[in-house]
Amino acid sequence: MCPNNSDKKANLRARYITHLAQYARQLEALWSAAADNHSNLSDIQSIAHRLAGSGKAYGFRELSQVARELEQALEQTEYLSRQERVSAASEPVSALLQALRQILKDEPNEAGHNHSQNTAVTKNQSENAITVLIVDDDKDFALKLSENLDSYGYITHVEQDIAQLEKAIANYDPLAVIVDMDFFGDRFAGARQVTYWQHNDGAPLPVIFISEHDSFDLRLASVRAGGNHFLHKPLDIPRLTTLLRAELKMAPVEPYRIMIVDDDEDLLSLYDSILVDAGYSVRMADSAQNALNLLDQFQPELVLIDVRMPVCNGIELGRIIRQHEEFSTIPLLFMSAFADMDVQLACARLANDEFISKPIEPWRLLMMVKSRVVKGRQLQSMDRVLIAHGENATQDTLTSLPKLAEVRRALNGLLKQPFERLVAVIKIDLRDFHTINNLHGHFFGDEVLQSVAWRLSKHLTEDSMLSREGGDEFLILSNEHSSRKELDECVRELVQAVNQVDMNSECSELGSVPLSVDVGVAIATGDTMTADELLDQADMALFKAKAAQDAERVYFDAELQVEQRSRFTLEQSIRQGLDNQEFLAVYQPIFSVEGERIVGFEAEHEHEGDSRRC
Image 1 (cartoon, rainbow, N blue to C red):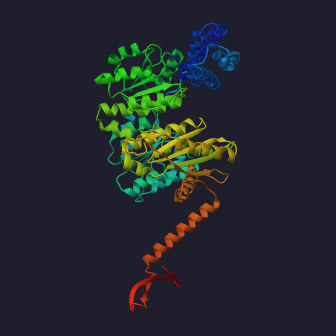
Image 2: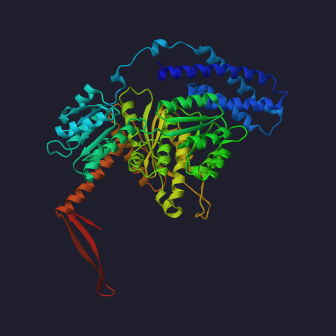
Image 3: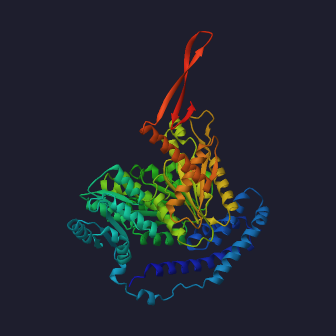
């Protein structure tokens, strides 16, 4: 019997701990002779580089941190004498050895542990089934749809009463919900009930709305109800199943092909396990030469390449791949614990793809891989179903950041729990971005957005989520600060990070294009019930910030809401007054005594007895 996912991860972790013991012995031996042998420092730096990239990926955050500090200490002293380098590395080496010893003390090596008790448990078929709830008052249609989905391997349940939506979800525990918009002549009944359920529950279930009608109002209602997709009847069943697979993160009928090139055996094993479990077909290479041999055989749709490898580094390998015409469109995703902007830009220029910094958590690896393999397959095929899949992905294809729906789900989850730290939404808008697009072109504008996304992500921890729904607005869900002062300092750093983005354009007389931002911040309180409330508050704060003459940061408060409500009420009153013809224009002549003639008029308006001069 094959081991389950938890067994595989336990075995990988146990093997990694065994390797950590080997690293500790190597490091001690190298360090004891480092003062006399200069090459030992390079070997120590290589060990630090590997541990910086793999530690956090295996759950040892502190190990990655101290390893990176040692690597940076050796990098920064590269041109100093051996004795000076040894002196600079002394404290970081001690910290890394201490971290390794602590892990080996706290984590007993369980490699080879017999997991038969776990693997002997046979799962019930219902535990592995993909359950879908269909809510539609057309019984014949619902049963036909149920039969179609059953033929694809789904287990379906049908509910005809939209008022029973919440109860049906609780009873059947589906992984996705398909909801008709129209019930008994009410075209918005489905969206209204889903909204009610989302406010009460907010479970992160994909919702696909279906309807015989198609209009802007219906699609807007589906978006506001948190719907992931809107499909028009009669349904395209293959497209529906493709969307379900994408939302449920299931492998497509033909698995995406991923090749990983890294000389770190531990990371190769971990990444292979993560991607295979997610349904990808994976091949691994521990050197550039092996990777080139695999290209023809495997025909990968994405190649993940470690930048720092012996003999032929990742950037050189990328250039070699690009020399082959048949591989010129394969997306390349470069990885490294070497935090250098020049390296990142070199990767971006080479393949027009992102550089991803190690350590890479499993969720982040899956997020980055998904958007790129979809993009790669689209370049190789014009299949309409796959294109629709790519357009409806939950990640932004330009920056690989999650879209607003993902933030909304995460935020709803946080709001249901007691707040140990501040839960805040930070909305950032690039000033005059439309002008940048117009003057420098959309390609340059895309590069700006990618650079801003990269800079912002470098200033956030795993307790924050960075998102881009589209345009020039970025959204950050923050849950890492214990005080307003800490949050404000974070916002200042984010603003400064964007201001420091250095983008050069041939269309600019100054060479570089300066950036500035407006920021709106909303902090959750005990009265905040839903994600949409907090997102709306961040919108209000950003609206006020954008109205200022200079770049501004605005925090939402009750007065701001009163101001917005007052402005909205005034606008509505003016519109109503115009519609009801309650305004009367009165013109007063301006008479020139010298010329003895009328030279102009002053206009006044009267509204319910109130007279004002315009």
